[in-house]
Image (cartoon, rainbow, N blue to C red; front, top):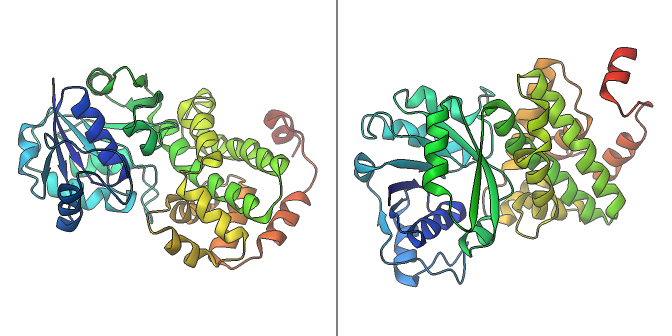
Length: 337
């Protein structure tokens, strides 16, 4: 048994709390919003995000960070834009050496930093771990078989997270490619949003399969330029996470994309989803990063134009289909340019 301190009472934070308690761990679930915790206490479940999943009274719901002083594993389950602020509040409270596992899949706007980099800046005494892979909260909470990857610059920290969190319904693999794992998890949200747009436009399975396949190529291209490993993008945090996010009804990114494809303005579509749509925010960051690094990402560029410049999605598709001829092999066409 271990003491888990989970920050963020959203869908994934709650699901990990439920799973952790079910596996015999002592779990504290923190939120900065008292009304969220009160609703869970009152209803016995997270009605908004995980309806029908009981939240045991053994899970300690708290608005205080003081409980982190006794944590053996800390899990950061807040949206990407809140990671720095919440981590900063933990500084001086979380004991030195306790691993911090981040489960948000995004990048810090403006700095282009990966979220473990943010954690390392705010909590330099604690090893940062990235958890990523095909893992919808709804299925994790209900005990659906799920397989993810944990990556860290500290092998010991990654293996600690693996040892504590692994159970009969959640399998974890360790990976030393933190760059690839984090970029795969973050950037697939952009492609999933595009796949939703394709569904909203009624373009069919061929178009979505093409977006997914060429999308992972773009993700890997940027990832390699930033120091990631090619094989990582063929793994759980790459193609695995991309598949589930592009095809699942649980995916907020896909649902927002469907609305956009049906004619709803991008910002309004995100607001209608009512929860964080990481792909919307990450599209701008990915677009800016690709330009800064000098990496070609045509799907990301069209996504940026649709989301932030009001480009007609139909025209974006036509422009993608009308691009100059290429060889599918990256080596061939890169050498021939």
